[in-house]
Image (cartoon, rainbow, N blue to C red; front, side, top):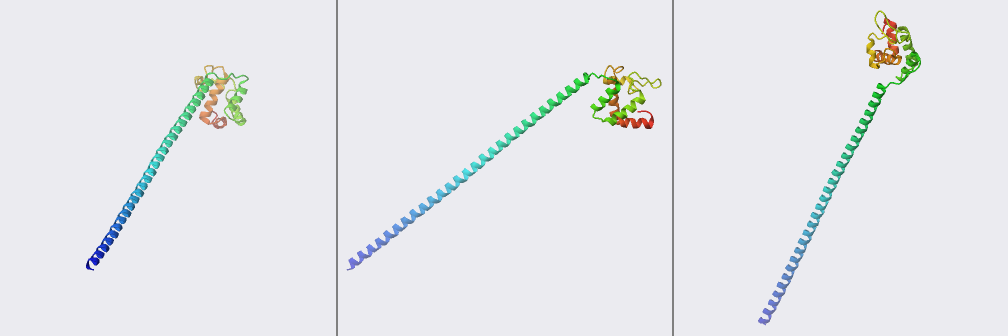
Length: 206
């Protein structure tokens, strides 16, 4: 009986040890599996983060490239616009120089020429009336009118007649040249013919 009891006890101990070993093995397997799952999740999270960072870097690089492209295009547009403006300004200056060097042929009496040139400057009929009053008083629109006292000459009665050469070499005989110079003088000194006429009325000279 003692032998049987001892054998039974040994069998129970073996079964307990086997169950314990099986449990420990199961726990190790579960722990290993959990560790592997955590590692997989960590790796997946790291990969996702790296992918997100890579996408963000690529997006930022793309945005910088697009911004540089837009800046280049804007700079090119401004450069083209500036060149176009310079070209137009050059053409305008060339036309102005050509116009200055080859003034239009004026026909008609000096008063009619003066009326047309006043209109070309954007002055209205009232301004021409002031000019007519002024130059009728000064020279009666005579190209060769000369003041024996002061030496003033021509339609605008320039005190320094040679200054009219600024408007053209034919200033002695061409009414249009004299009128062009006279209108420039009036514009620069009085602003308008009516300003010059008011000064003449007040002081008897302009």
